[in-house]
Image: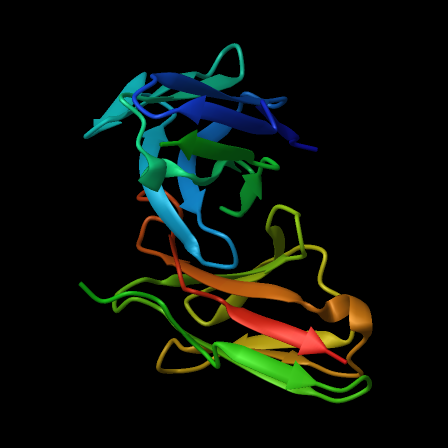
Length: 113
Length: 114
């Protein structure tokens, strides 16, 4: 059974700092990996999608990398802003899962002004 | 751009009542997924439909049922509601091929059982 772990569970940083969120998964036979952002009590906003054949994806100040063989992904946020405060979730689709997403428990990020 | 539409946004029901949640996927998305997110937890997969047929089933209680209709909208029916069913329920859709281009989630329905 696929298990997704995110470290750290919570992170508090001053504004302007660059930061890295980590995601690991136990079964490397994934189809793709997707990073989401969730504000309290709100829906999931897709940030970046990485196919299993890709190494990284970038969008603005966000960069996500994928090392499928070692079961790891990182989300890099440059020049963090208070508006980045949210919970960040990574999720994987396994090759044999029928395309369901398996989520990690998320990293709760607080960026202090 | 069109998004995944869920209704209602909020729902309050009493124990043992029935609730129906609706989801309208993005046009031309052929797969719909339902997830349940309890307080402080990550989303848990309930069930999915591909081209109006059930394609995968997760930790969905027997009291819950779902279907996808000819217009591709989906409904999650929840009967004999329990306090523990209070959660955010998300619907997501994906275009073909299944899951390859990622998922788009709706804003969710917050169900409170009292």
